[in-house]
Image 1 (cartoon, rainbow, N blue to C red):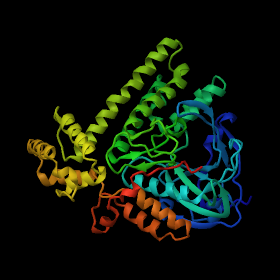
Image 2 (image 1 turned 180 degrees about the horizontal axis):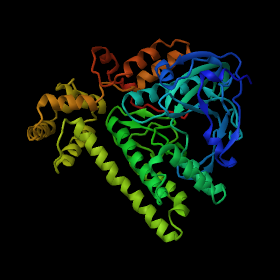
Image 3 (image 1 turned 60 degrees about the vertical axis):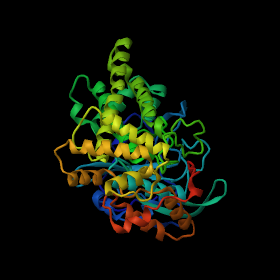
Image 4 (image 1 turned 30 degrees about the vertical axis):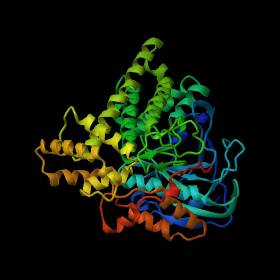
Amino acid sequence: MRELDKEKWNLHNSYINLPGIFYTKQPPTAVRSPKLVIFNHALAASLGVPEQLGVFAGNELPGGSQPIAQAYAGHQFGYFTMLGDGRAVLLGEQITDSGERFDIQLKGSGPTPYSRGGDGRAALGPMLREYIISEAMYALGIPTTRSLAVVTTGETVRREKNLTGAVLTRIAKSHIRVGTFEYAAQFGAANDVRSLADYTITRHFPTIAAFENKYLLLLKEVVKRQASLISNWQLVGFIHGVMNTDNMAISGETIDYGPCAFMDVYRPATVFSSIDIHGRYAYENQPKMAAWNLARFAETLLPLLDGDENQAVGLAQEEVSTFWSLYHHDWLAGMRAKLGLHTEEDEDSLLINDFLQLMEQCQADYTETFKALTLDRNDGLNLFSHPAYHQWHERWQERLGRQPQSRSESRALMKRHNPAMIPRNHLVEEALDAAQEEDFTKMHTLLLALESPYSYTAEQEEFSQLPPPASCGYQTFCGT
């Protein structure tokens, strides 16, 4: 495989300094007839990488690349299994002009030793879906992996039917997962977890490296980032769909956009994923699942926390238990902002939860309801004609009146925290359906509108239409 001009890239390969069990050297598999479908010019400029079709197809290597497939394990729906990059290759780590380090990964780049009988390929629809949702999450201000490019391969992939093959270029602070630590603890030697922990600290938490209790601080930092991340998900109605431990990034970014979707009607038990038949990863369960995953992460660190196992368990339990107070603090702060509350009062939780219960009772659309509150209009929503809403509205207005900020300041705060639009599921599906026919107009138009979700422009109104009744049973699939 040809390597391109190194001067156009600033790739490093620090991950291969870890013990060999963590990866396998693996070049991407070349494709027949690559065609660039979409390229993220703004992201490319920030990374300092050129637009090179051959690289994003897996037909050529960027200068300095030492491609690998990463090994990891994970609890999938509660059951532990050996995994790994079954259809992805890490090309290397791009160092930006500002000194930041980002993984450059090809997803759908062919089989690896971890493919478990799979073809290592990906279909166009799921890759475009990840592009749209990850970029929408970025615009919403939620930590996330990002999408640089999608390339069609000129080949078909066989799933339930023949589909257009594609490769996604994913950008991440790293692809270190809770499942990476589980893999090291289960299959590695005694020092492998320590090596991975030291690498993770150096890469993501360098300020704690000199502390004697750095591994406990590592756990603390990961708990803190996950509490913030999950609260952000809940605040915009995002449902990840498959919160297995291999899909929890240590960096605190949202990763792996498989059967994800945004909630329309506020229903805490909402599940979109076709495989989540028992609702393990329902919207209301996401905080619980994050805490469960963090407990699995903490278990891998026990030998590093204290030589006495009981002491180590006590330290780990104490840190993991802080997730709930951190999460509640972040969520409550976000909900206050969504209601224009600059100050804090003890009764705010009751005010917020009463409103959410009313939304659920009235089957109110989550995003549109908060948008209507922000704009002080009812938009024809049934909620606003309910007698209980008028009582709640009086309480809310009284609460706003008890803070020193003006109503215009409260409205400005609400605009910063209540998106005017989200990637509505029916709009995403329309864009993906058109893309299957090589019409990418709807996708580009949607992406453009999603770039500024808090701008409240007139152009965004067409994207704020509620889904038709036929979309209420919306279901998502992993897309593997």
